[in-house]
Image (tube, rainbow over all chains, first blue to last red):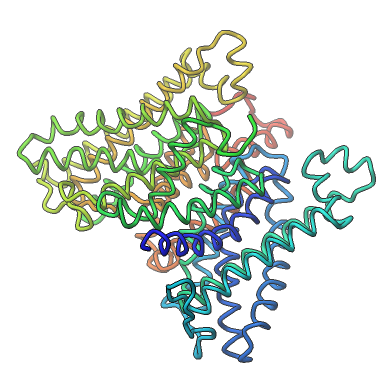
Length: 286
Length: 291
């Protein structure tokens, strides 16, 4: 029974990781940038979620506002931060992104205060008995929300013209362009959707913890990197599996390895072991 | 005067650590986001020795050795993975180091190690030692840059596959770069531990790795003078300007971003382009890269 509960808790945590990491892997797949500042957009999503819910009382509206505004900001980040340095060596964008992330975290601290904010009336707190264990409504909401969002992404990329153009650009930008696809628009779309998903994850974490603080992005920022590397950099399906797997491994690891290793270091043991055996990641192609 | 001496000491330590990273990332092109782990390995190694009665002069090389050995192991990883994968692996090593140290009671755990013995040189003497060591590391870096090994590093940084094609044993050089750069970080760590006299897991976390990378990137990746200059300025400035200390991280972040966005060559790149521009107007220009 303990194993079952640990697995469920791991899957909840893993689905949050998945939402954050998918945006990151989309950006990497298209532009070969390790977009560390992505986690800052995740934090901002959390702030918007709490602020809008507290102001209007509607949690649904908060999610939508957070996703749209943060998605828009993601496009601005691309336009003003990454586009001008795309033709530089990869470490340039990486370091710029780290700088941007640190600066944004400090901006959050200065604007929203260092101690974090909470919901005045936390939504979805009732608990529900599922298969013999008590889950909070919020936890069920999070899992359902992740399935809807990722499912929506899958439908978008497989069934619509926009999605097909997107995938074509990821596979071969030059060829896609010669078929008349506006590659630049695809990049904006990519940043919009990736950032919106991160914002949704931020709102959900805010819901689960009932707290948003300036530094809440720092752990996900590097953990999401470990996940997308495990998933084979740029591979969406691999990233999803890696995220869920890491969630479960962590929830077991905390119980069984907690005395010798920090919870947050488990991801990297997992990562280093996998990379030494398969340098292209769990699911990446050589 | 004591205050200035402490600042100089800390600046010298930062120069040593940053030049060590510059050797790996700047000269050999292997990006490392976990340099603070080696800095920490040196600090912990020597602190464990000196708190158990071993002399500082033995602990100094021992700390370098511990860090260099750990660096060699991580260097082996650089043979398996490259570029972005390597950046994340080294970042992982950094987190792993902190995560493991935090849970080891033998290493002081969360509380860290207190009351690290004084090397007995006095404040001024210790500063002189640090500055001399920083000078030696800088001189060694400059020598290395013009040596055969430096050229090999350069070739690997530029294009590893081509370097291999012309017969450069890339694996051996990469391992050498990691071992040397991390041993230098170890020296910096030893000096830090015996200056501050207290170390804990949080002294060597991700922010410290980023701070070192910031020094290298802002100074100009691969430029010895630029990196040393940036290390001094970025250590001293927050202490001098209390306003800056308040917004230290914001400035670090913004500076890192701005330098990469507007002048990816760092300060050294700026100086170079100013010289080139001056040259166009008939003022002296050698056309050679500044070291």
